[in-house]
Amino acid sequence: MRLSRNLLLGMLLAASALAAKSEAPDPALTRILDNTLSWTTTGPLPFPVLPEAGAVHLAYKNPAVVKAKGGWHIYASRKSFVAGKVRHSMAYLGLSDWNHPEQAKVVPLFTDEAYTSAPAVFYYTPHQKWYLFYGRKDPAINAEGPAFSTLDDIDRPETITPPMMCFPSVPESLPKKKGVRWLDFTVIGDGKKMYLFFTDDSGHFLRSSTSLDDFPLGWEPPVVVMKHPTSVIFEASCTFRLKNSPLYLTIVEAIEPITGLRFFTSFVADRLDGEWRLINGDARQPFAGVNNVSAADGTKPWSPHISHGEMLCATQDESMILDPENMTFLYQGWDGKTRVPGVPLGNFNGYHEIPWQLALLRSR
Image (cartoon, rainbow, N blue to C red; front, side):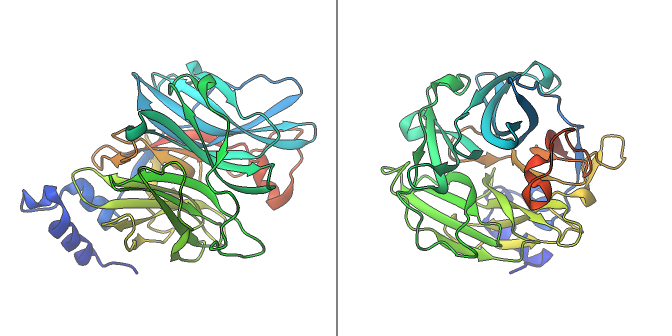
């Protein structure tokens, strides 16, 4: 259901604690609800490439990012071309200054042969421990699904624990379209429960939940929360609590059916287990996309794709609080034509061979 401008602003005025203290809604929240956002982008961030004998670096992608201990900590998918095929692993990128990504500390993770990708990272307050969630193909059951590890320290990736699957088998409640596909898992808590949200590349947005005591296990069978065309919901969702407001925001990567361009749509809800309301699911007026992103000098962005990424939250814990007045988005982009020399294109029009690069969007 798409809400009108007046209804969105009315919901904000009625629900927002901040708005209750003033005669007008907060301008930053209004831009989100009115979908009048605009962004500037950096160019590609030159993170160091890990040397690996016999391998060709393809990309860092699907980043999760958190601020702690005086720096920024990124856990990301890592794609490399080894022995004639693409290897899917992950990497840690640690930096203190976004102006010098070339100085980042880089550590490889999950370099076994099991598919591992698309992390989410946060500090779980009840356990006083860092958690990393990600998608993984479990060799024991030969099926993909959400998995997790813990970390003693966010900046010590070598302390990561072995993967543990969240579900003992693939849930029967998942939609089936040419098999089951579920991916890009993100986690958020509301102080009462923990919620796992994800997508399936077929237009479904799904949710599971567990109690604070049972976390990180005990997940309920997933349910479909929303169904839209892939031009509205495709993959790579992220869910946040909006600062100074009881509202939650979900952004989802969509794909334009004719051009194949990637962009983000957005939804709001007043409860994590409630109804999500579409703000605008149109590539012409996206939450973030080529039509509302420009370079700092006002020219076209380096990438026509605004793809899988994560907002830089105001908190590091499971509350996932996002400050609407200071929004920065670490995303993956691609100029649409560059390929890595000597790497042949594989399935899905060579999707896995795309040399994605990371960059920052800043709201204005």
